[in-house]
Length: 132
Image (cartoon, rainbow, N blue to C red):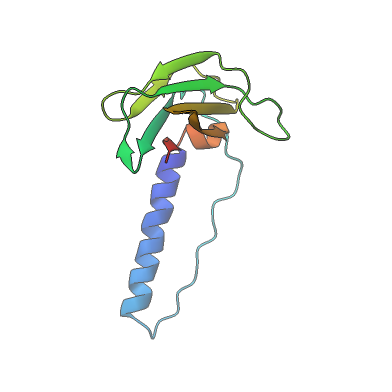
């Protein structure tokens, strides 16, 4: 559902920009955003991770998943699973709790790592990007 809403807003923004550029004599009245709270999708239990090195897909890179050490300063905690990226530099972690924040660490080699932590509203709606 959040992807559909963001696509709708993007289309609406483009339409407004197009109308503003092509018809400078008209006044555009913005439409208020829908109100309400966004909740996690209980059916969405997977996160897609993309690893790149110098903007190219990085295959066979180990990616660890953990929960944050603390909620006040989300940094990766102790990993509970590791998966390698495929040919296109992607891996998918499944069976995640749809209400939790998770952290991912890519082991890029030569002691280099790339990491990020993301709450459900990010990992359920977008691809997590790691790398250089």
